[in-house]
Length: 573
DNA sequence: TTAGGGTTAG
Image (cartoon, rainbow, N blue to C red; front, side, top):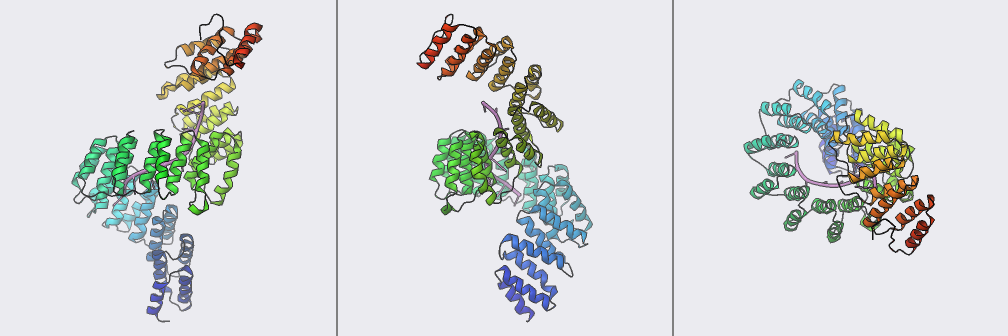
């Protein structure tokens, strides 16, 4: 077959199998030099699905008799564009190992991949090769380099690269702009923005986003009104800016007047309502959507999970799985669903959903694994939780807090304390949730003085104990029999104690048969909560335990009839 | 090179 005919056949091939046949033909007829063309065609026209093309092209690369930068460069760019950054970087390294000189495609795509993964070390080593192979005047390579340093937060070197560029395009300007904005340096960003010779919509959007993130919506709005053309990202940035500032009403106004909406707009609004606790408005908006997609389902399921409506979250997952919708849940969906199951506190809910996740080939990431740690810990499978915790790529504040709490409620107090120390050793600052778990652990172990020290150390991290932390402390003191100290702590609380705090004291009074404080505690509990039967029966048991049979009987009768009871010497209604 | 979603307490 003539070469021109082969090339035209290749260009018209639309399936991977056709391309493979042509490839076989090339090899049989000694036309190996046409392989780069085949690689280029395969990658450019996406014949077949991504995975099979990727596999086939990699196979070709490994067997090229005369490896060429063009084929390798195209492939590296392909992986980088598909978001397969690890693969792109590893192919680049391989290309380097076999002694091929990279072209600008290869080197800029490898740099982009490092930037997206914030893999500074890899980027720096490619920087050395940029100098070595003489790409110092290629605007694409230099911009990729500049973007890398902006993304990893090294603005000094980013600035140096920018200053030394012989040629710049608007992407170079936008990259340095986004670096300063990411670093929160609005002053420098504004200076650069003013200098951009031909600003595009991305330059404007970046500035708007920077002011919005800094909470300066007035200036963001000023820029939004000034910009010559707006795209969807401009409008969506304004919506999320208002939501971040807590102005859900202004966000809605923007949403209502924008000319075209996409799923990001809908999702941002739904999660805005979710964050302000307005589940009803979120659902109303969700129901108004004509074509619900993965993003909107995820936003609505997350809304239910985050607002303590786990049953509704699971019901919506069920709707989402309807075959006619053809929507496949992803790891975002499952993170919320796991949280919902965890709130229900029974593993049976998750057991019926887990097979779906496995069918969908969902890969556990740290977020999803953390949700599972919490689920297993709450359902008593602490060993399974620990196993997941050990397997995390990076143990962050949330993972530690979930694990500490999990150990706390499962009676593994010393493990909880050890984890807390390990966390501090990794320079992770605890938050209020961490202390809830830790105090729970001390409470279960009956370590009163340690708990007190821990409670007092919260201020070292700038944390102000919440009413729940006081509740746990009352529980710790009370269980250990330090009832007067517990009462004193309640009296000196900087906020109003809730029924939980007084309930903890009441429980302790029952444990140690303390009548006087028990009467006071029950009085407050009844004042704070409508369902009083449990409290009355506790006090009644206290009376019984000290032989005050008449009082005990009277209280029990009262509790049965749900009437309000009067205790001698007390003035509650 | 710009917009958006998930995980920890009670």
